[in-house]
Image (tube, rainbow over all chains, first blue to last red; front, top):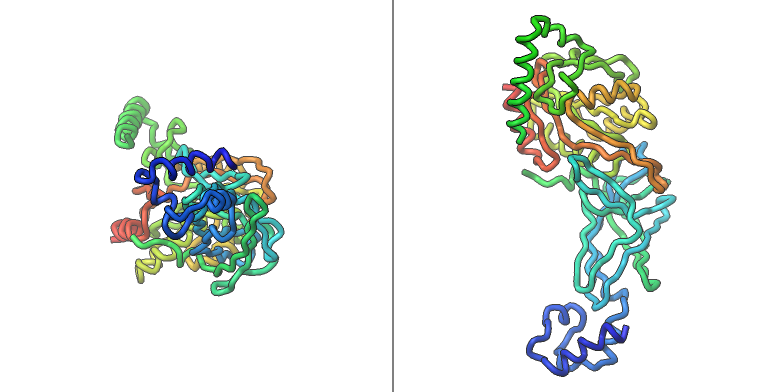
Amino acid sequence: MFSMTHPLILSILLTPNVMDQSRLSNSISGSPAALRPRELSLACQPDAKDLVIRDGWIQEGPPSQKITAAYMVIENHGDADISLESASSQIAQVIELHKMELTDGMMKMRRVGSIKIPAGGIVELKPGGYHLMVIGLNKELKDGDVVSITLQFNNDLHKSISIPVRPRSAMVKEG
Amino acid sequence: MKYKIFSFCQVMSLTIACATLTARNLKAPSQTAIGGTNSASETVVNDFALTDQSGRPFHLSQLRGKVVLLFFGYTHCPDACPTTMAKLSRVYKLLGSDAERAMTLFVSVDPGRDTPSVLKGYLAYFHLNSLGLTGTKEEIDEVVKQYGAKYEIEQSDSAAGYHINHSTDLYLLNQKGEPVKTFSYSDGIQVIADGVRQVIR
């Protein structure tokens, strides 16, 4: 960790005018001049408060379906990369991380071990890309229901979110 | 690119037709695309046989007079299939009274899990004028080939079991069952509705 912070501290001390302001503004509020090395070092640990999860929804499906998908936007306002490693919920036996890709004229799906949200970055779980694959639903999900899902990140970070159930048709774009 | 393939195959078709005066025999219902070529536009046969969601034999020719939207997928699909079906339910709304002149066919490429009754329950959810179709793997493969679609079953360590990678094109067939247009996955509901209307009128 020190090796990551050290060059940054040097750059602050030596060349304050060429600092990457946007990167810093993602992680630390206030004036960069007020930074102390100790604060910077802390900021480089993944921290739950640096994670913003928004626009989540889980797909309503045919009543007989035992699988569905959940989507959301994950923002990492911290200085360290964060990895989403797993997820769980009382509504399903298992939740896996999956990725869809349109290649060779086919929509291909594969299971992934983790989803990296780079420092200061955003990852969108969306149709045609990453999703939480919700397997073994033990209740029928209806439009308007709210589902609680716990997301497990690296460094023992976890975050519980409540997201609405939406029919896929409501999420189809016009045009 | 598509045009090149098309014209090449038109030439091929013509050559075959000229060379063999019995070319018409190729239109026997069991015949698939000439030489197993790879585009809907090359298909000379406008029929196929599968089993419908009630377990009854189905022939495409039953739907003469209807515009058909044909899609290949599977009900365990979390993304592309429900997206396409959801798009089509929106397309049907845009079509208004024309919607009853269109029929969606969902051909399952997963006969192992998609029984007729599973397909029936799945499609009922989307409120479409639709039919789920299944069959033996061989029967399904023949139809897949006929339209130039493709799929592959991929074993996975997922708790959901194997999954199926599949093409996501949507084929528009006219009232005679002739493929007239292929919509890509990125085509929006307005594009699809316009395409359907053009054929209806």
